[in-house]
Image (cartoon, rainbow over all chains, first blue to last red; front, side, top):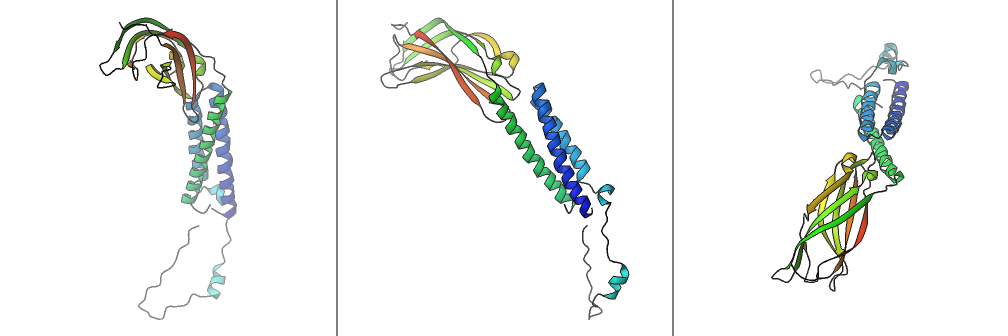
Length: 94
Length: 167
């Protein structure tokens, strides 16, 4: 996810959960069923999870501009002194 | 929201916080209910009235209990616990409350009832004070919620009296 996507995901999560809570409470109170309130809310939580937690493509509409490889080549990584030592590469999670 | 796990955690905690909030609101909505229960307790018969060798009086009664507790139920009610207590005063205790019958009402449909029964629990005094004693039969109820605050109240019926002599 990109930065805009993260913000969108967080906003969507908060709005959806609150909206489902309001609908659940109103429905449960109106029809007099506590169970219905819990069921609607649980359904809402599952739906919100499906929409906001996985890394959907629409969360990546403003992708980060990583540096071109030319820039990276201008500043090479220091080479290890011993030819037999293994160099570890760190991979960062997006 | 950096990763799958981070978002899942944030969602779960927020969802649980909101769940606690709607349960609190459900409990508060119980205060909007103004119940109007009614009940009548009759003593059909004093089966026997004896004193134990250690000096304690005991009474066996047959009771007729009629009640309409339907207005106590709300959408947030799990069950209503109801019991009948015999209440009287003695020289040693300013208030004696002895439970003689109880029951659990699981749903509104069962809340309007009539029952004829001998006392479910023994009515034994702490001492030999019951002869000729005036007592009340009080119907207590506890409205147990699905979530939140429990409400308890009672209805007092007075004017009962134990027999003057053992039988």
